[in-house]
Length: 206
Image 1 (tube, rainbow, N blue to C red):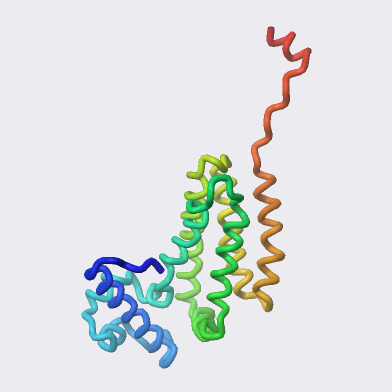
Image 2 (tube, rainbow, N blue to C red):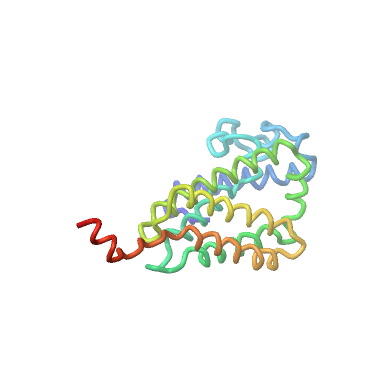
């Protein structure tokens, strides 16, 4: 996560993290459905309005690194060196994110998410939003020159790769298996250069 530099920003980030940590602890101790927003605010010693200034919903408390995840993916595109291939850069970032999310400490959180229809629905909408942001970043890169449809498709593939690898018995092996397919799909969208005109074509054009 980006470290805030100003005193006010650091204080705000610390409050946000305190709220998120408190919420997660309560959810894991008591169950997600058994804990309300007021419970979290009281335990974190903040006003409910302060909580909502940091998190738009109860579901967002569970996915407190949502914005960081999205930013890391888009930066994998925009921070590439000139002419650095796109797919290896995205593969590197997805692998790092998968390893973070499959650590032993994350297992109880994912069990909680899998058991909650509200959290599963929120995660699905979050994935779609991440895919849209990633597609926008890819489309904005003049060196890539793909159609909007191609950018959107590859972005969806990359986000799905994260989900599939996270749920796999061997996440690293899943990433290794999935990304060559994404690379092939990306290459298939490369614009075809126009064929050189033949003699007959030149005669016709003349």
